[in-house]
Length: 211
DNA sequence: GTCTCGATTGGCT
DNA sequence: GCCAATCGAGACA
Image (cartoon, rainbow, N blue to C red; front, top):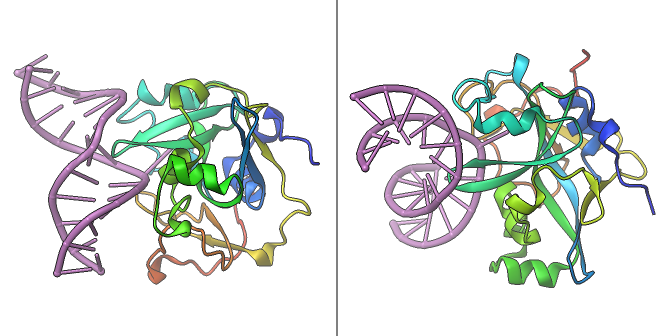
């Protein structure tokens, strides 16, 4: 059983964190002890100092203050009335985070379906807000918790994913900064969120963010 | 109080 | 594929 990722893992470039998070396991332990888990098949990086898509500090300074908490804490962003699960990155005071966009359910599928009844299983967690609903996460309860909390934590991919298993694309659902290759998808996995237009696919297959 | 924005979702065609 | 509903948060009067 791998050790949960510690906050120190997140205290660096969110682009690298997003890449290395891919293939890992998100584990949710319900109060009754039941375990809901899923493999991270899609993740995006947001790094405000160099990211035109990151509205933190522009439109929603106060709202995004949570993104500036110390690295390795859960936080929620809301968009279009839906909660999105993120992990803070970098040192305190810098708004940077990794957004978990999709999971492949591993255990607790039945309970997830009670949280979020869907007709097709692949619709259960194939979206950033969908997985929050499926896991039954309460934003007020989870926000600000350490990323290695017993009730909600992340396990690293074992073994680490090879580059050829990862597709890097432009981010989706945003207006600015969409050309940055900061969206990481498990190649060929059916659980990723709705497909990006083919024109958005970049000619890169591995992270280029060396900073 | 009202308007606007948005990193989404789900229903309809 | 398209589009309306969604609702929390910020801006402004």
